[in-house]
Image 1: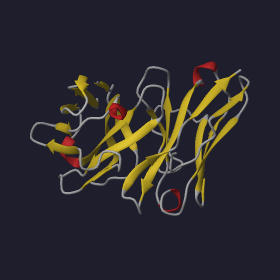
Image 2 (image 1 turned 135 degrees about the vertical axis):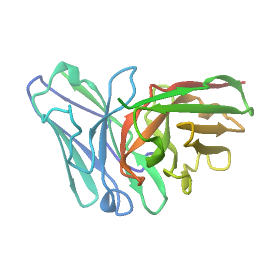
Image 3 (image 1 turned 30 degrees about the vertical axis):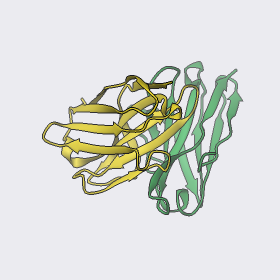
Length: 110
Length: 122
C-alpha cells in the first residue's frame, strides 16, 4: 500500500490528452514539492516534472504538472506510442521523514 | 555529463550481507544529497534511504531501518549501501540517485543510475 495513490492504469488514443492523478496528505503532497517520473520498460526512471510543475531541459512541453492541496496531476498532450510507460509521482513526507512514491500508473496509447 | 554507476549487486543467501557502491561523476558530488531507491521485480518504486550532502543527516524506509546503512565518501565521489540480514523481500534492482537541489534533500530526483540487481535466495 503506497502512501501516494495513483490509478493503476490509464489509456488514450494517439494525439489525445491524458491526466494521471496522485493523491496524498498534508504531510506529503500538501507541504512538499511533487515530482513525476517516466519509466520505460527495462530502463531506469527519468525525471519529467519537478517542483510541482517545472520541466527539466529536454522534456517537451507536452508534459505538464500541477498541484492543488493534497493532490497532484500529470498531464500529457499529443500522445505518442513512445509515451507508453509507467509513471510515478514522488515527494517527501515531513511526518515520516521519508521519501514516498505513488504505486505507479501504466499508460497505454491505444 | 552527470553519471551514476552502481556496482556490488548479485546473488546472496538469506540473512547474509552485501554492500552496494555508486560512483558519481560529472558533477560536484559533495554538494548533493543522494538516495537509494529499489524496485522489486514487476513492482513499483520504493524509496530506501537518503543521505544529506555532508553526511550529517540520513533517513531510512521502515522496511530497511536497522538492517541497511547508507554512507558516502565525498573524497571518492562514492555512495554506499550496506545491507545486512537480507530477506527475500529485499530482492530488487537498486538505483542510486541524486536530489534535484544542491545542499538540500527531499525535493526530487533528477539523475538515476542504471541500477544493480540484488537477489536474495534461500
